[in-house]
Amino acid sequence: MPCYLFTFHAYGSWYPDRPQGYVKRGEGILARNVDEARRYRDRATFEPAILEVEQQRAIIAQSIEAAKRLGSRLHAVATEPTHLHLLVSWATERDWEPIRASFKKSLTLRLKSKFGGRRWLSGNGSRKRVKDQEHFEYLRGKYLPDHRGWKWCETRGEYL
Image (cartoon, rainbow, N blue to C red; front, side, top):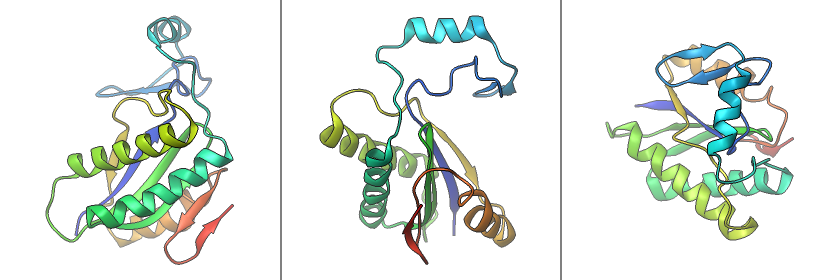
C-alpha cells in the first residue's frame, strides 16, 4: 500500500532569503540567497499568502473530504502559516502524482471559494514516500504533531 507525505507551501512563503535557506527542486537545500529571493519576488503575481487559523481549518476539512472522493486514506494533516502536510495512503498501485495534484486542486478550490480568488499555494509541492512502519509512526506521532498550526489525526480528530 503506497503511503506518502505530501507538502504544499503557501504562495510566496518560502523565498530564498529565509535564514534557514530554501529548497530548489533537483538541487536540495540551498543556502540563503537574497538576490535569488529578489528575483522570486519580482516574478510573483500575488502577495505572499499566510495560512491563518480559518484557512488551516478549511484545509483540514477539505483534505478529509478529498481523501474520501479519491479513495485514499488520510492519516494525518499538519498546518502552519507557511505550509501544510498530508499523510496519505491508498490501497491500489496508483501513481502518487495524480493523487497529489487532486488534493492540491481540491484545497485550492476550497481556499479560493471561502477566502478569495488569490493564489494560495505555490508550485507543485513535494512528496516523500513513507519507507516503513517506523517512518510512518515517526511522522504521525512526532513530526506532524510538532507543527505549530492546526492538526488532524484519524485516531484523534482535530486538535491544536
